[in-house]
Image 1 (cartoon, rainbow, N blue to C red):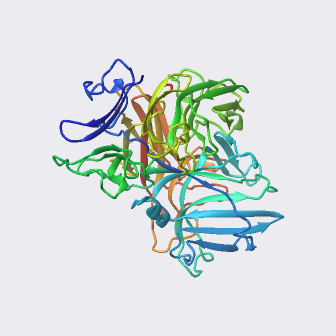
Image 2: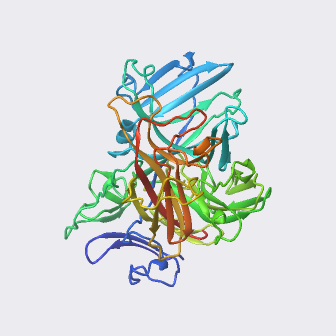
Image 3: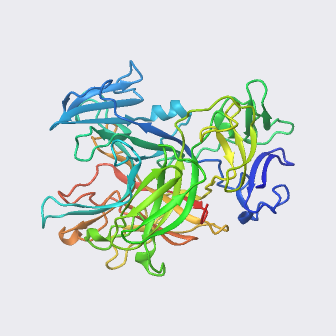
Length: 540
């Protein structure tokens, strides 16, 4: 049986620990022996889950029918009675050339009211490519943004998820009534569109999307406080409080474990090689719901002593050839992820399989601490009081020894200046960025680095222009056919380069034009780069 420990330290602090080897004792193994733990709440950067939620967003053309034109569509505001200035969600819908388009926009008050947080959280939006079954997703892509052959433009390398925080128009273009407000957008279309989209999965992280500090919800331990309680009576509770708080604290953010604050799960993690044009299958120990997706970083197969074979995110590009795309698609089915390569070269994918079940809960059970065997091996589980003892779902499971717990090895914000990002590109290297910072990542476990980077902007006006960014994540672009700017990194670009599992380079495109199709720069100016570096196990 896996070694699992939950209890109180001699200092009165609640802890949760899962051992990597069943021969090790969670009570006596020193916290400094990091490689011996699958999870240890006493180690910095460890959390039961950094993914607060995975929200399903789907168009509703009946409740919110189309009207108007693309520049002035029908607009709807939630909650009922709100308007463009104070709504949590706005929905815009119009028809064009026989197709219907609907965009949902989520504003800061939505996240504040739903999760009790004060900051705009990092959000990533993924859209299935199959309109009906909603189980197929694309990997990364390259995009040549030309007006016509021979005209200046960009080549852009994208991860297949949108993580943008832009100002969007609520009431007409600039000068119209109502303030343009920043939002996270999920754009969808009807089935007849060229690229129909029937669903968006919006991942909400418990991490700021901008340069705000990660809140610390703990306090100073107080002797005699009840900080751990597993109780099937009185409605049932399963709680481990953070230092300074008791199990009866009302704010669920003050807990390491709480039955009413259960994060999304990471069901698998590791690396997998996929031959050019081939397939590969990842098998998990859980049935995968429709809210499952694969987060990834991908590289060309080859010796990582050579730069182009290292992990870059978004993937490495060195020319304007689309055949350098590290492309693939994947299908979620049963308990497997089937990857099909569309790349012209062999690739290696570093991945996390993420899922929840839409905040639904089962009922009818009596157990909270559950021990079992799923046919692969033994496991220990802490589940929501009252949930099914036979078939609890992912939103019932609080802790499970079969899951992966991804520590945050490093995080921070780099100002775009010569102090925080002191390095500039050498000859022929401006496609990487205008400034760089090399980081040493503390990683005694030998985990695989999994960075996320975003370009963060200063808001230059009280009522910002339409389509001005506050944050752009997961994009890297390079100018082509742009005269002396050719080969220059685009504004809004961020690029992470994993040199090895303790060294990471971070690049920024600064305030270069974001496109050279017609040379344009943002009014908002670059503030810096926000980064989060997770560590994932080599296999799970």
